[in-house]
Length: 58
Image 1 (spheres, helix red, strand yellow):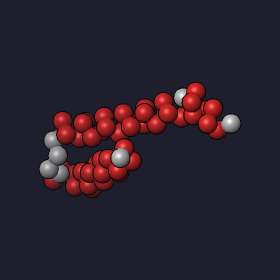
Image 2 (cartoon, helix red, strand yellow):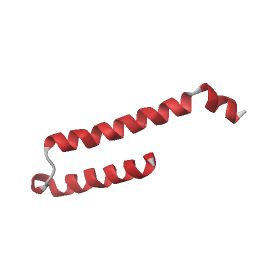
Image 3 (cartoon, rainbow, N blue to C red):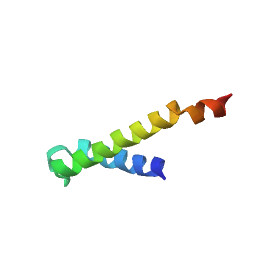
Image 4 (cartoon, one colour):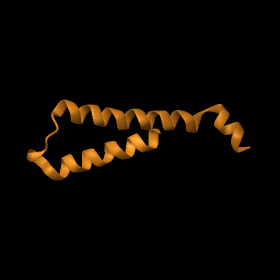
């Protein structure tokens, strides 16, 4: 579920980047999308650094 949302956010940000000044997104919306990506990265880092993840690899 997180992966799907991340992909959707990445697509929206790429569309915004390509549209440039003609984009329909406000700066607040772009900031929220970027925060979503950052939060997803932090969650993935936490999962990867978890002791339970380390135990599962052994």
